Image 1 (cartoon, one colour):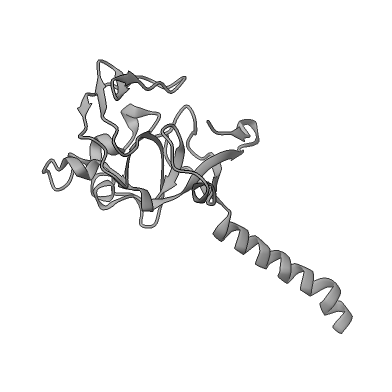
Image 2 (cartoon, rainbow, N blue to C red):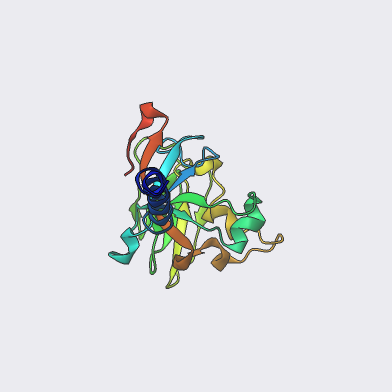
Length: 187
């Protein structure tokens, strides 16, 4: 009996414990429920978020992040409880972001996501405050993101509600692993 416990049960218990530790501290899988990040990530794709990367470097413009939505996003989007969002970082602290003439401008320079449809709306954001991010979906016209959060809080425009606190970031979306035909690293 002891030998069976040592040879069979113990390795299974250790494997499960390691899997839980890795998921909690290093990498966590997520299923994407919407098309807000198309063409980069599609509905029902499954991704892995790197939970360690931002311990070694700062969040950068262009990163795709998994994050807990701020209250303004919850009010505007009404997501199911506990469901994190996935969006692209378009503005970091000190950036000025404007969406005009179907172009997204960061500090006056065009920010392009290859393959993405140009935005059909206009938005002028205040400067991104310290400790916050401006986040937009790659599918700008069908994404509940910063361009909606700041204008949707109980019908009152509150510009600073357009930003997500850096502390809400869970990790960087790194890999699409399902379906197999979309396996690859995310840019």
